[in-house]
Amino acid sequence: MFTEVLLVLGGVVVLGVGLSARVVKQYERALVFRFGRVLGQLRQPGLTMIIPGVDHLRRVSMQIVTMAIPAQEGITRDNVTVRVDAVVYFRVVDPTVAVVNVEDYPFAVSQVAQTSLRSIIGKSDLDDLLTNRERLNQGLELMIDSPAVEWGVHIDRVEIKDVALPEAMKRSMSRQAEAERERRARVISADGELQASAKLAEAAGAMADTPGALQLRLLETIVEVAAEKNSTLVLPFPVELLRFLEQNTSTPAGLTGSQPAPEPRAEAEGRSSLQGMIAPSVETTEAISAPPGWRSDSTASSSNVARASG
Image (tube, rainbow, N blue to C red; front, side, top):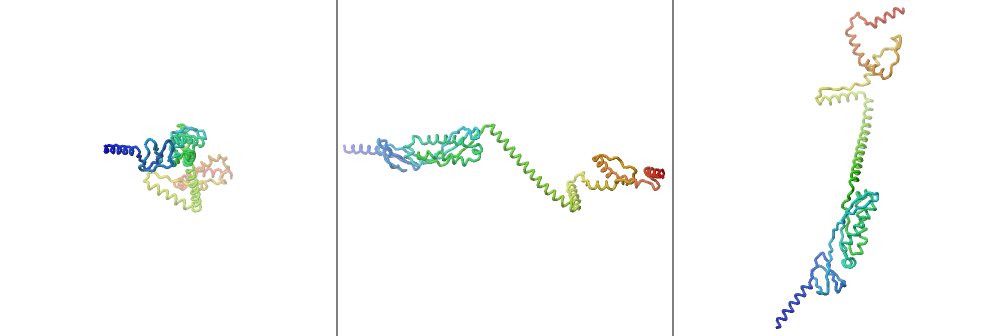
């Protein structure tokens, strides 16, 4: 009889210990509600005991929680419709306040984050959303952290993940970027031409001071062209040489009785250039082919005119 009583008592004790023992994990803290009131001391990680039927144990995770903020659509300060989503990282720093003061602190943080994100969209320009995200993240973190402090929650970090733009805005920005790249290319090309023209002016001045340098440059160009084994070789003909031949082959004004009528300037220059190129060959031909006692018709006519005047 006594043994049976001991067995019953031992079973009751074991059952009571099983109902009273609770395990708190390393990343958790536990609150004990006794008759609905919170005991002042938090239960630390490990094995803890409560009174079955009297105490209620509430575990709170102290880990950092990653919460995705649903995409929020809004109009920026420069009247552009965008859709922005973000992510917020937070953790509980005061389990008692987080459990007692807020019914559901994760849901509360989510709602505050969505409201703050829409507010940030309305206060910012499109360029700020695309380029100054670090500053916007700091402002968004401050806006969420202000009410979360009273809930026993600390906001570690807030990041804007993506900014979705309308297709028309994407095409406009693409055209703008293309125009900007084209402008930079033209500016760089013009700058290169300016520098090249300055160097060419210096080279021209050096060649003008030393005429032999032009001939050396011409010979160097010929050598470069000939090195490619071309069948055709193009040589530049100096304009100064044409002017020199024109001056030497022009007829003196005193040999003719009457001066010809003035010709247009462009036609006169063209004819002078042709005469400058043709006259040397004609004189050379006449000098070679004329017999000793022969004289041209122009010479005979000149002699007849002189006799008549005498």
